[in-house]
Amino acid sequence: MSVNGRTGDREKLLLHCCCGPCAATVVQHFASAGKQVTGWYYNPNIYPPEEMRVRQQALQQASIALGMPLLPPGPEPDPADFLLAVAAEGGVRCRACYRLRLGAAARKAKEEGFPVFSTTLSISPYQDLEAIGEIGEAAAAEHGVRFEFVDLREKHRESLARARSLGLYCQNYCGCLFSGLERSQRRAQRAVRKSKV
Ligand code: SF4
Ligand code: SF4
Image 1 (cartoon, protein in one colour):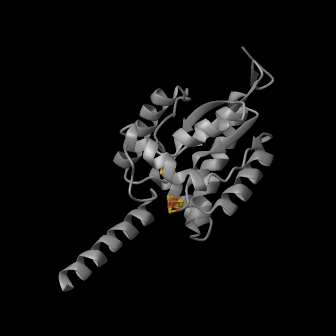
Image 2 (spheres, protein in one colour):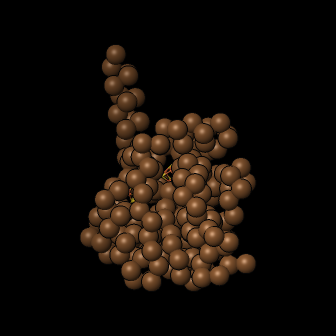
């Protein structure tokens, strides 16, 4: 039974998850800090929709392996939500992306009775952790919950290795349309360089 956001003596934490690979280590971190972790998948930034589903499946697989319950994800988001958020932020896409996802996670935490929330993004060396901390705190203040900011980047390799050993899907681009295009450009440039040697 949950009383005042606690189950037994453990505080309930809602973990925003963007897919499976980072979840293992982040869940372990919060569990050893005495939290009771529940995951939630909300990532309207991910494009195309098939990729969104594959990452969601990776999280479901990870949640079974880790014994972490998941909140139902809700209806599949419209990719336009992300593009509109980026446009509203003047094209500064990663800040818009964090604001969209962490804002939704803070709202969800409040609605579902979690006093605190965090995100698996906090282990990725490819993310702007300073912006994540600032935006997470602002979202928490807006919705009357706490944001647990952690920097777990030094554990990223370990987390990837664990994900591979669990057979989880590991994606090769951050997630949005723009990052997918950048990946394609890098591949094309590599192919051109190879063809010249
Ligand atoms: S690999 Fe990237 S998308 Fe997947 S959980 Fe880690 S930060 Fe999120
Ligand atoms: S690069 Fe990653 S963090 Fe930045 S907008 Fe795209 S999906 Fe979001």
